[in-house]
Image (cartoon, rainbow, N blue to C red; front, top):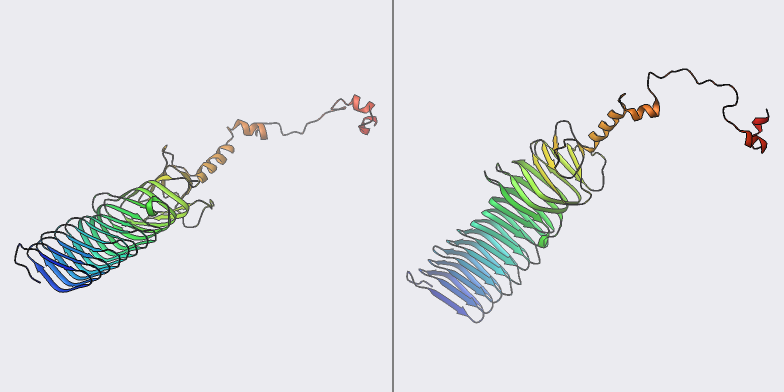
Amino acid sequence: QTAPPGRATARNAGRDLQAGALVAGGATRATSGRDMDIDSATAGGDIALDAGRHLRAGTLTSTGGSVHALARTGDLRIDDLDAAQSATVAAPQGQVELGRVRATQDFTLVAQNDVSVRAGTAGGTFTLSSTGGNTSAGTLTANSVVMHAPGLVRADRLNVASLFNLAGDRINANVYGSMTPVKGTVTGFNGGTATDVVLALSGQGGFAIDSFKARTAAVTNPVGPLAIQSMLVVDRATVTNPQTHVVIDQHDRSIQPGADVQIFSFGAPFSFALYDNHDFTNTFVIYRSPEHDQIGDKGLNRSAVEFSELALSMARNAEDRTLEARQGTERQDAKPVRYSGVPVALDGDCNKNIVPECTR
């Protein structure tokens, strides 16, 4: 169906709707009581698709407006979506699978089950949200990226200009920043604690994370500084950049092989920052190598091992008066003590025959 420039097109079906190519100079709207299958839709204005059950579309292109697609009780699949303004895709009771997505403004995808996007760009915020499944993405590029799911949150590459927000039980993502600092949060679903986090952060401007919550985690930071305002590690985590390998272990406080810096927080949240070979934290530092700086909230640059060595060194110092009282000094007379007679009065005990030596 083709409409003249500036005119809108509308298609309505009580049951299923199938269409080849929909072209309109203005807006395009299609509604079906059950399934909808559209090869392509091109419009100068908005595109709005509303399916009572499943929705499948090949190519959706709006050259001057937004794109909205809804599958009310089923699944939704779109191969290619291009919106001059914003775009929203929703499957409140199903899953969503998208190929390539482009939106000049925001892009929002919400579904009950799994959601996936092969590639996408947005001038504003790119949001992928599942209320009961997993979220996965290939390469996403946007000012901000938000990915939420109660299961797995996975992204091959997130190119982010200002903000990223990842929330899921398991998180596996590669985040690339810009020349300015990128803010972010990494938590479990609905702000809880993630079971496992595997995260790579790379950007010249660095990363400033407000909240990081995980039972176990492995964070690599190949480029740029990293700062975490509140970091919660329940079991064990590692944070690594090209010069420093930090181990956070809440159960094993022995010095672990390969650790340049090892810290421990008794399971409580703590602040953490890492840049080159400099580590900043306000929690308990078990160990740091001589080639690495560890700065605490009071400016102390010593680990627990170094404090122990310092205490032993002071105890060996000849100026230590408590040591003199316990062990004496080198200037003391080395001759043995001599005495004559009975050194202790034992008259009372002798009368009671308690000490037989008294009668000798």
